[in-house]
Image 1 (cartoon, rainbow, N blue to C red):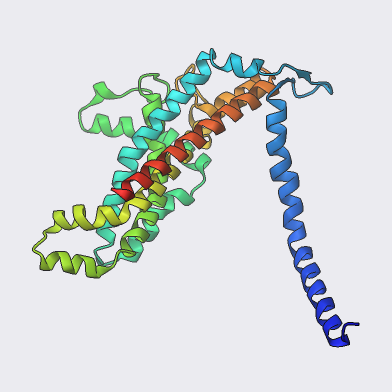
Image 2 (cartoon, one colour):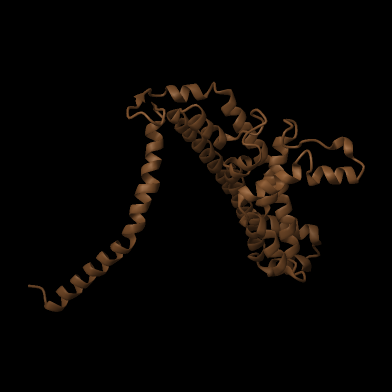
Length: 302
């Protein structure tokens, strides 16, 4: 027979464990209802035809997945998103790195610059889209006004209504809004590099460029990979800026995967096919992320 003291300890442990589970129960219920259940429903609906209203859903197997391979507008939207992601990887992250390097030099007012550079990501994408829509406006936009002031009236146009310029204009808006969070992450990575490494490089006679190539870049590779992955994932899922400016137009010129999925749901009432597009889109993003992580690991081993 167990002593009373041991029984009290066991009861106390059970009570503590029960209390802990009760604390996480609300979060678990929310996750199951609004996270796991919708996630599984997307996969289930992707093999059905459903208009979003009817009670019955027609099972079609892999027919939706076969159809998506010949869906021209869908793959065009993927190319548009990839184009924006490529520009963001090059120009957005380059700007973020340059600004992070400058602020990391303990310049005067560095904390103020940190706040200023991080303001664009905090702003609502809809608000940013509306503001830039006024800047790009063909009639009274600020961009055309300054082009006229500089004597470049021949370059003025309705920037967001021209298929030749609309997608690049969207990319500029996205990069302006997104460089701030890359700046913060890169700055944190730079400040995590031991200063002793730079001092040792200076003793060996290394200049600013040699220190950047031989110290900063190798130490920052994990941070670069993180920023690249977040840039691609964030850019490929762009939606709010496009919704506030072009809504995918003119024509299909600025359509991206998210707007294409929404068009399949609301425009064509094909909820099952929209879920198929979402599944394929998710798999593509997963493959891109895993590929980048694999490349990062190989770079560390070199």
